[in-house]
Length: 450
Image 1 (cartoon, rainbow, N blue to C red):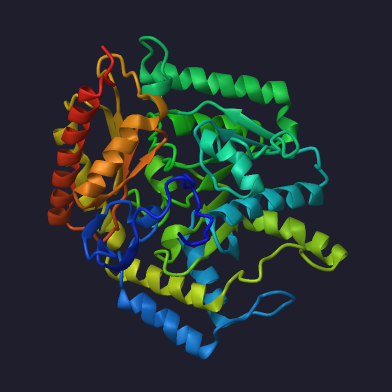
Image 2 (image 1 turned 135 degrees about the vertical axis):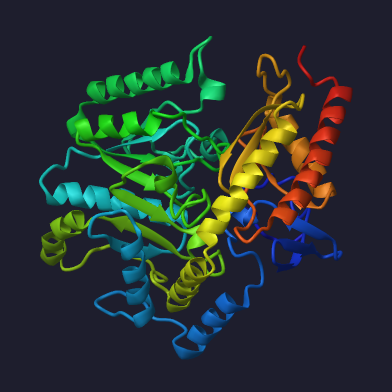
């Protein structure tokens, strides 16, 4: 066993699958076995594997300028071109962009820039951030504290109070509804809870609320109709900025350019990573509006620098990878393709799994979806310790399909955007075989509720 500390892994169960190569939507292990990569790696390999155009763009840049930092006024053409491209794409007013290396550090950057901005305009008390239960925003100290999943908080002693983190209700109707509450009543209740929380905390102390348009690691939660409309009205009412974490949803995943477009969100801040470069080179982007940037200029002049940045911020090869990826999205109409094939995926998932005895809910948009596995279809009772999710993930892999169990007992799908209808059919056939086998195994083990 290699002396590697593996991320998001049970240390008693490491090195279970060794991947050697990838091609299209497929990856191959060290024994030569072929799998459909049904989660696009970690929600990120949008162009699939071995895209020679992106690899060539990276290689060409490495031969030309393999590295340059961007501290102290230094720049290079790829970072300028990428910033111009993104600024023209995003629904943020007069956008400015800070580049980093991962979604986690991009959210940390936003956290710090919010502090910097409100100090700059003389409102240092406006520092609290609202996140949501079951939210996922990364694993660095600030981003990890904005994350609400138990496994990401347990034993780390996250400094939630010191970082002024507040938590609001998860907008997952299926698991959080009360009694016979309708979706509209559910939305009204949780938004009223949020308003009560805002007033109790004092709106003048709250800087922003961070939301994933559609969640990923917490189970692909698609909030009910009316939720975002009401949420935005509430936040605007109290002068709280809307911070959209688009790390998973951004660049076609939901069948539109951004998750904000799909869900009707008008954000002030946006966070990107993953599909920005199809994961071929680490890069992230923290987007702020021009009025926020302009307010910070005098602060940086007073201090002498904007005292934040990474060695690899705007790495030229990363920028080249992102530029080529964005070019391919546009040239090949991949957002439109994701919408069309995603619609087919969503329809097929519901036809195949809505009545399955192990599936409580089918949910998703575009090319991101999840099956909520339940021990009792009538009551929606779940399984202890993610038993069903782990079982289904194992049996999917046995059937040549790599998926991921998230939030315990949800099985997430997030294939590369290049997937075809025929490949969707193949993926769902393998998934159906695995879910059927999971049901029989869980039933035989006495794990189904009565």
